[in-house]
Length: 237
Image: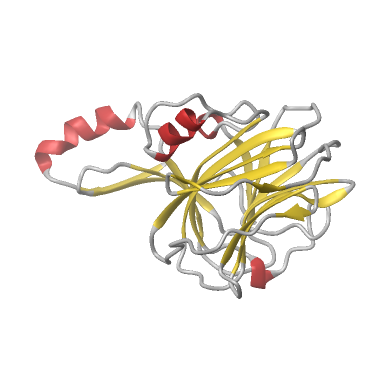
C-alpha cells in the first residue's frame, strides 16, 4: 500500500507503531455515477427476521441518496437506509416497507452515526441517530430470505443493479456492522461513542470482505492532529 504522512518528526516512530494496530478504515465515494459502488460479501446464509445495521457517513449531498442497500432475488429493497431530501427524512426500509424520521440534524459535511433495528416478530422499526434513540414505528412482519447482495454507494432498483446516479452516495462511509438480532441500547451507545462493542455477526467492519467497482477507495486514517493515510483499492474498473 501507499503511505503518505505530514507530521512532526517526534511522532514518526510512534505513528508507524500505531499503524500496525489501526483498524479504522474509510470508504470514499468521490463522484456521482450509476456504476461506482462497494459490494459487501457475507457468509451468513440464514433468513433474517430481526436485525440491526449501524454505519457512519460523511457527505455534502443535499439531494436524495442511498446509504445502505440489500437486495434479494425476490425484493430489491429488502433493506435500504435512504435519505429523502424533499421531506428531509431518513428512511429505513425493510421488506419494501419504510419508516420516515424527520427533524434530524442531518447536516452536510459532518460525520453522522446511525443504527437501524427491525424486529418482524413485533413489527417494529427504530432509528438511532447520533446517539439519540427515536420513536419505534410500525414495520413489516416479513422475513428476508434468499442470497443477499449488499451494496454501499447505490440504491439497487433490481437485484445487484438498476443504479440511478441521482440516488448515488458521494462522500465517506465507515464502521458498517450488521447483526442478526436487535442489539441492546447499551451496545448501540457504545457504537455511537466509538467505544468497544460486540462487532456484527453478519457484517463486521474490522474483517470486511468486499469488492470496489469504479472509483471508490478505502483509506486507513490516523487521528493525531496530522494528515496520514494509507490508500487501498482492492479492485477498480
